Amino acid sequence: MLIRNALLLLTLIIMSGCATNKVMDASYSSQVDPDFSFTRDKRVAVLVSEQGNSLESKYYVTQVVEALKQRGFINVHSYTEIPNLNAPVDIAVIINVSKKSDSYQYSGANYGLVDSGNSTVNCTGWGNSVNCTENKQKTFGVTGYSTKTGYLTGYYFSANWFNVQNEQKIMFSFASSYEEGCTDRAVFEFLISQTIARLDFEKPNEYDYAIKMPENYSCNY
View 1: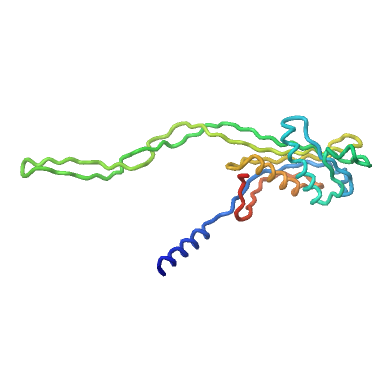
View 2 (view 1 turned 90 degrees about the vertical axis):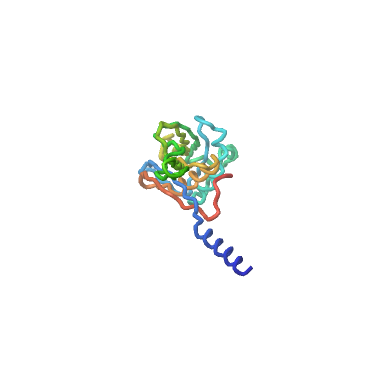
């Protein structure tokens, strides 16, 4: 019993040591008007784009509002609150989420039984009447290559910022990810949180990044 418990403990230690946190990959880019002053006291309204799936984009308005507040903006409102505001809006942020699936061709291996290079010999009979048969052994391996079709889904989040006073665009941010094995909601929420956190109000940016998610994180919700 003692040996059994020790082996069980050793197995658990090995399994915990092999556990890896999920890494999410994405791209970020932004353009900004260097002459506009993004003071945090400006009144900001978050709206949804009329292009694409506006119904899906509406779901993420609240997340964008809260993320902008975390960046220091003290007057951030959803489009639903605009009729009740007692002061004019200074900045309109129009958001949009979307996804697109594409197919692609690649050369992939085909698998089956192939010659292992090993064989056995069986012999029967005696003397001059011995009869031997060679049996080649098979193993599972690559039998050849063929053109296959793969599928890739891109997830996108964009935000257009406008100066309401003169209707001029003052900022644009765009994020994309081709993360696999996740729900749409999980990827969109990841892109939004990362994009708002990375906003640079002084200069344009464009880069790829990878985030190691917390332990036990799941993107299947």
